[in-house]
Image (tube, rainbow, N blue to C red; front, top):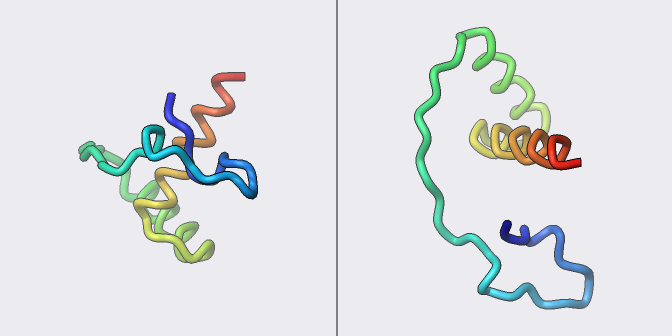
Length: 66
């Protein structure tokens, strides 16, 4: 697992070897109501829809890993 920038302790420089710099595309089929809810939450948080989905997936993965 790679270390995200936000996990680097203050005062430390992130190691470029562990920073993901590329993205992969994934095609999802979502119900229209789910898309609307994601858009509303993203707008409320000042994020793009992509950022909101990434945050939700990261949170899910962290919870499942515990």
